[in-house]
Image (cartoon, rainbow, N blue to C red; front, top):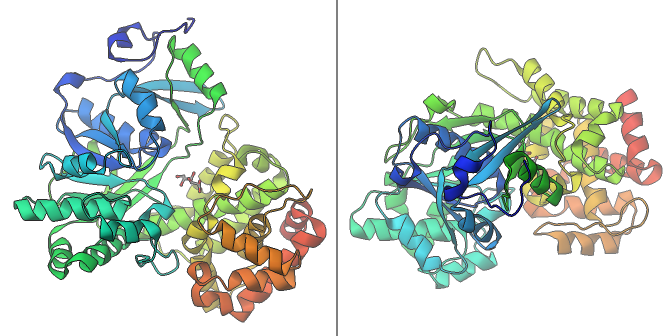
Length: 494
Ligand code: CS2
């Protein structure tokens, strides 16, 4: 079917190409129960799909109101199509398309912070979930504490009812609910932070306490912050993806999301104000998410970051391209081997099978997941992905050479010039600090490694550990001397 100029929307659902899955419920009867902060592709391809299943199964008061904190782009793309959008599930064998109806409305916080707070105060909203990325919590990644000097936090403390940051919105809305005598909502973090519920609880209560001790205590006593482990690979959508989806649908969708067949969501079953029937939609409800979260961060995300930095430096555009090189596939496996011994999993967890499935997922040739995208925000990612496992291994006197090579790859990357001398577009809240340190040190491992290891916010006391300094400096020296491709090849063949 030719897409022509028809646009996805409520009125056109019955004109979708045959075989395209669409909401299996009457959307007009769905009411909102969740406000989601961070309306990016990941949320739309992961939690919103599960909620779509819950709505179809009868949990009709759990629709989603999504909010972007800054950019109007998602709202501008989705509002004209009644917030319907497509999830394209891509595998080597082909693509499946599904139109999701769980998102009922969207807001842009920057445009109207009061309107977002108002939505969050509505007692019908019983869950506030978040995917604002690691840096969206305005905390110090190494310690997990609120960064009181973060410009958004400084702003929010002076503009309590018109906040900018995720912690600011949560605390403003909870304060209003408390004043109204309404129960708090459950705060459900879906970002890749270690102990994410616990960490967000700490950040939120630290922020609240700066405003009022009683408010901080009320939040601790009354609000639930279940931890979650979320997993699905969701690369950024590009124009070729948009065209491919239009061809499949027979109409245009301004912002479809691309993903893989695999999806996993493990949630601690602690909700103060109820929840949809998540288990019926395939969510694993457990008492303690921590082992699953560490497993995912230290196996999947750690090897992903290693492939991203070293793959980018080697000239590979995507993770699938990187994985085509057998030395890099071996590198990913070696990162996982080093990390696996630091994990303590519940009986019955098959870590070997999990690791094998990760290698297959990374190699999925139908996903165009750019190494550059994963390389972003390393300062916020390194502690929970790589440094925690390094610390545990050092504590047991085990070698850390593969993790050290990954950290060295990050250093070589944030120094800002690739192996051909071209500028790297480094995106990171600390990018300017890294660039200044790199300028001062020059491309010399013995100078650059200690300079970057001294960045407290990322490395904390671990940066002074002599065995870590030595391993990282040696690996960085190799990257400068031989280039990333050769360094990886040598590393995995020994
Ligand atoms: C990736 C993750 O961008 C990144 O840093 O490692 O987004 C990864 O794709 C997801 O965590 C997979 O669940």
